[in-house]
Image 1 (tube, rainbow, N blue to C red):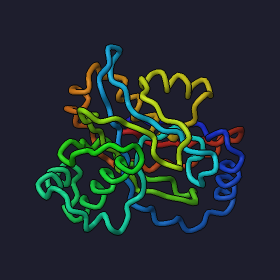
Image 2: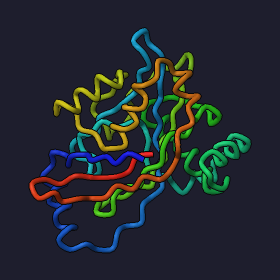
Image 3: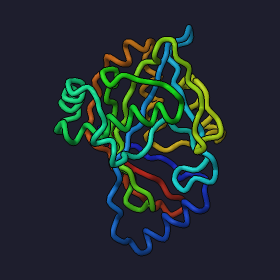
Image 4: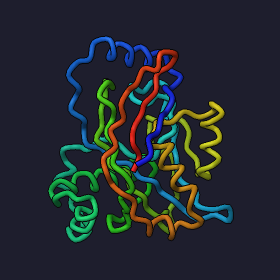
Length: 232
């Protein structure tokens, strides 16, 4: 697996928290289950994905571009969902159906709440599994899924947690990130890099990437902080 380093966000609060942790590591918070979805559609220039930018007042990932998603709620474990689809997703995720159900139910619920789309559970494709680094004050055990844009529906930003939404070509947003015009967390960057290698939504959704959990480490290089991890 390739080792990757990601620069620290341009946030004094993030750096202050990270350096405080390195000086005196505490007991890491238990990460909360979460799910996020890359909703994708074809264009003449290649697949595009729906993204949102979080408002600057958010305690976690302020002003960052993200895909629709969020934490698992207690009610997600009791949601009425397609049991067969849950079983299929659980098998791909190497989880029990009971473990997978709240995650996939949260994915469907969050996408509807945040951008008004009604996805089918059977359309979800697991893409990755990331765990927030131990030093963060808010930690998530997040599953990333992909899904095709449903026909006849429109994606609209409907969340008070975001101030901008758009369909973007992966490489365009990656360029903005490289130039410092867009801020993103490492898993978002990696998901965009992967999507950028596909010429169609069908090819992207038929891909079966490794789902090894990625848990980045905070590393002090002296002149700067980075987040480092193997990427499957």
